[in-house]
Image 1 (tube, helix red, strand yellow):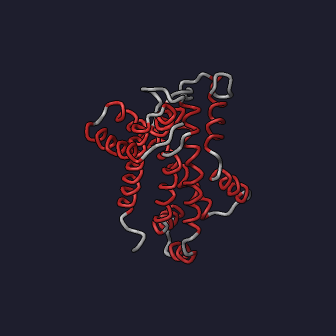
Image 2 (image 1 turned 120 degrees about the horizontal axis):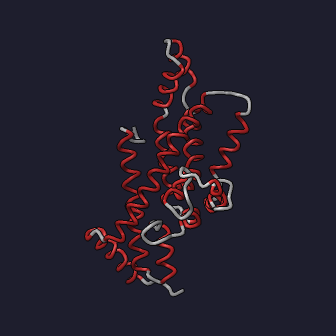
Image 3 (image 1 turned 60 degrees about the vertical axis):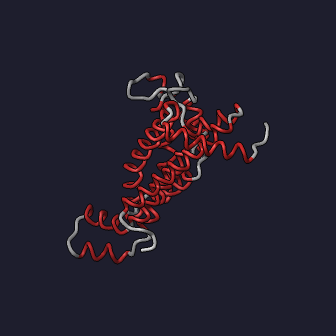
Length: 242
């Protein structure tokens, strides 16, 4: 593989600006698919991970340590292994793929990539939410209950107090999937016009030696990550310095 000089890097940056300003159809298709897949996966992870993390942080029950241990294991699970697991489950001879149900996603589709990314980000969202909830002053819970709050009201108050950590958990979940390559490559197949995302397109263009386009896509990926994380912090309603 040939080396990349400074001129190619500059051309890549210029091309990135050109592709964005001209709204290149092929690039926009990749960008929108990446946002749709990662956005839906993050939504599923948040809807399941935040309540589970809050429950683990507020409740003590038999088997809690085992659940926490499994959760921590999932936080460090290699994404490519998750992709392999989803691939085997959804393949035609796999436990789920052999059922041929319409509700079960097929391989090499956006739905399969959403399933893989949800599994990758879910433990991070739940784990960081649990840590944030456990970091809230225990006296706050006692004070809220003393005022006659229900269990749901107490949980909501704790989550509100721990909102910085909850937002961090969502950001961490998003960061783990928007830049992921192995899992979506396995279950999506990197098919042009169907399952090609920013990360897989960067890998493909780099292998082909199209460093200008690969750099352009990389700049777009970094810009999207920055803007979405900035939006999450803005929606949070406060900064970490406050």
